[in-house]
Image (cartoon, rainbow, N blue to C red; front, side, top):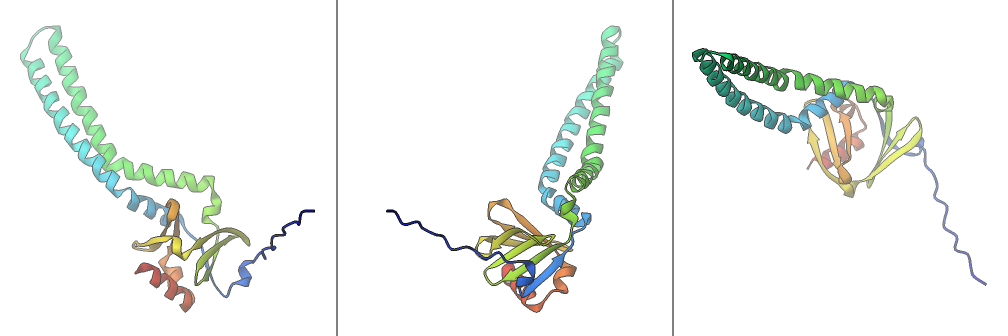
Length: 192
């Protein structure tokens, strides 16, 4: 007869079982600030490309305008229209990359937050020496072992913990300043 192996039953812990905990409520500005900071390099590259293509097509458009103005016949009209279209299109392209892209990014983040309102709900974080446990509405959401933390990013009003697997935890600095001294010490140890 085979002996059945019984696995020990793990005790489920609630947020009140932890001694060191804090409540974090993120606002849309924290997510927008995060998105703008992390897409800064992409925005710079896109702007450089937009400037290059604007100069290129502006010169081509100017050549087409000059050639169309110096010619006669039906081809002159085609050159004039092509020159004007090249220049106008590049002006709109520059306007998009320098003015509208940040606005579109902010709008996109706002739409995502409307789709998942739990991101704006108060979350309880419980801190232990070896892990951080997150609870949403009293239910366990996720746990992060301290050994899985890759680094900490310090933005103007937020602290972002980078975790293995591309995950991140966002903490507002004003909440951390009001937190338990043990939590503050643990967060400072992560920043080194």
